[in-house]
Length: 357
Image 1 (tube, rainbow, N blue to C red):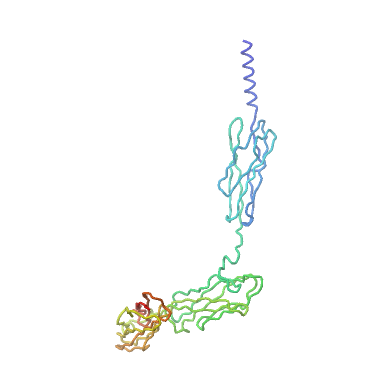
Image 2 (cartoon, rainbow, N blue to C red; image 1 turned 30 degrees about the vertical axis):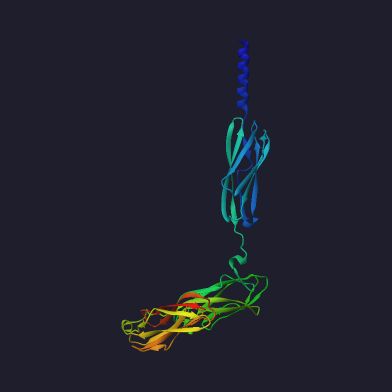
């Protein structure tokens, strides 16, 4: 009987002792605001400190983050009552501009079981300033250009559209800039660009000041500090506006009729020049005006016998191929005949030949 009483007393004492043991982790803070940080700062971190306010030891078993951009480190081993520890939470700002709000889960192990706590970090990452060379990839004499091509697209004859091109001074010294363009392209640009200055220059296309039609590629020479350093390309597709023609004008309009849409020059001996021709007729009433004959390649040339044809009249369209520097090959190119025929203003002619030695 006495032995049973001792056993019950010891069991009761053990239960009472376990019940008296208390697990309590107290953090100095559970949320931290980094505020405004810079992307170039790379990795920033904050230390969350805690104290064991309980009567039993515990240990940090694991700390997990909500994404790979957040990496935690923590105190290893048991934390006794009144003992302290810390959890360092780092955030990688590089490549992550903008606001962020991340959490980490703290898994705490003790003799009475596991439990969790949550810590949060937040802030705003200011994007790093990109070097000028990334925004302006074309360097002409230390003047950086966003592009070397100014595309105007479709330009109606008689209109004067404008386009802008952004440039920057890539060094810490002023640069003298001179842009030399054909007479139908007006360029507005400062004569001097301040160190690291970013500006926009304006190109105005005076389509009435050129006799060119269809696809036009003009060059603008670039000079920096009195030295020619490169060129820009201004591209446009100049077309006639027929939308204002009256019904009567359309009834009497010229009609361009070509004898064939394809010409085969046969075998051309390398080192020589060859010419073929087609017949162009005005099947309408009002005069047909041949605006231009535009060849696709530099070793081709197109021309017309007469530029103006009365109704019912014809002229030859001559196509010349310079095979002086060509290699043996079978060629298939095009020539465009541009007229004032409102129904068919551009006629495309296929030109084929084979160069032989």
